[in-house]
Length: 537
Ligand SMILES: [Zn+2]
Image (cartoon, rainbow, N blue to C red):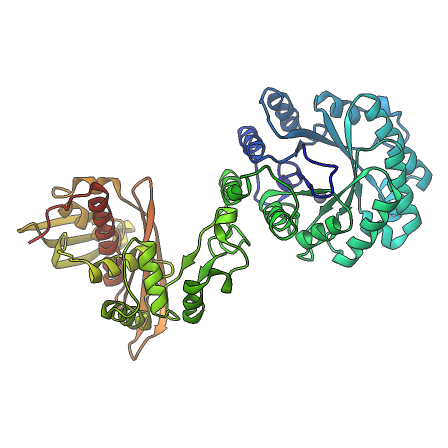
C-alpha cells in the first residue's frame, strides 16, 4: 500500500457501497466479486465492500470475499458510530461490522449540528462521545479505522468550532484516516481547500476526501483537497452514486497521475483505465458514456477539418494527453466538416495508404460530402464508410448484384394479422437466384429473402445477425421530400458493425443498409482469410 509520502495518493473505491446506491445500478454477489478482482488487478488500495449491518447480501459478500486472494487491495466493511444511549460493545451494528472479518473498517459519524440535533437528536457532547468511543473500541479490536466525517463541509460552514471538534475527537481516538465528506455535493473547491488545509494542520490522522457530484465538481473538489493535504481520495468507478453520483475515480486517477504527478496506481496500470471503466459498466449492464473524459469513445475523436489537419502534424495541438496513456485511442470522424486529412487518417486507421494530393482522396471526399448532403451519416456508420473507401481504392468485383426486389404487405383486419412477403432476384457467381421469404414486417422479410438467396454461396453468413435497426425521418434534403435514414447494426458474435442507408423510401434505405452490412462482412472475411472469395459474375 502506498501512502505516507508527499507524492503518493491512496485510492479508496466505494463503487460497491456508495456506487450501488445509484438508480439503475445493481450488483449481484458474483458481480461484486468480479469487480473486487478487477480493482485488485489494477492496484486500488482500498475497496469498500458494503454495509454488513444493512442487508444480508452484504454479509454474504464479506464471507465470500475473505476467500479471494488479493495482492493489492484491502477490503473495508462500512458502518456507523454507535447508537445513542447504547454501549459500543453492545451495539448490534458494531458487532456485525466486526463479524465481517475485514482488517479495515469505515465508520461514519455526524459533523453538522443540524444533523446532530434534528436527525440524531442527541446533544453535541453525546455525538462527540459516540465518535470517540466507537473509534477507540474498533482500534482496541485491532482494526484499521477509516472515519468518514459526514457533512464535514456543511457542518464547518455552520459551526466551524464544533466541526473541528468532531474531527479532533476522531483523530484523538485513534482513527487512521479522517475522511472529509461533501455529502450533499454542493461545495465549491475553495471551501474544500479551506477545511482540508485546516484539518491537515490541526489533526494527526491522515486526511481523506469523499465528494459527491451535485455541483459537477466532485473530481475538482477531490483534486483541490489533495492539493491542500489530503492523501486519500474516495470515489466510484465511472462516478456511480446516488443523485448525480460520486467522485469519478477514473478521471480523478488520471488527473492525479498525469496532471499532478502523484503516484497512485502501480506502474503500468494507468493504461488499463479504459478497460476498468468499461468492465464496471458492463458488469452493471450500463452503456458506457461516450463523452466520458479520458476513457469515453469520443474523448479523442476529431471531426473539424482544420483540427484534423493539425492533429495529423502534431497530436498535442488538439489533445490534452496522448490517448494511449489511459488505454484509449484517437478516432478520426468523417463527416460534413471533413477535410482531406480526415480521409487520409481514416484510411491509415484501416491500413490503406493514401496521400492528400492523390486524386482518389479528393474523389472520396467529394463523394462523402455529396452523400452527407443527402442525409447519410458516416460518424455512426463506420462500416459503410470503410466499404466506400475500399471500393474506391481497391478493385471491387461485387459479391452479388441485385436484379430486382418486391415487397408486399397483406393485412387481415378480422384476424388482426399481417404478413409481409419479399421476393429478391440476385445475380451471384454467374447464376440468377430467386428467393421468397416472409417476415415480421417488410424489412425483416427483405432481409430473410436476401440471406436466403446468398446462403448457398456464402454459408458463413449464417453467423451474421441483425442487432439493432434505427430509423430517423429527416427534413427535406436538397429539394426532395422527407428523407429516411436507416442505421443497421449487425454482429457475427465477435464483432459488430453499423451501416447506413438513405432514401425517400424506407424500404430502399433499409435495403441499402442491409446490403452494405453483408458486403462489409464478406469483404472482411475475405481479408481475414487472405484469399479472395470467388465473385459474382
Ligand atoms: Zn457518499
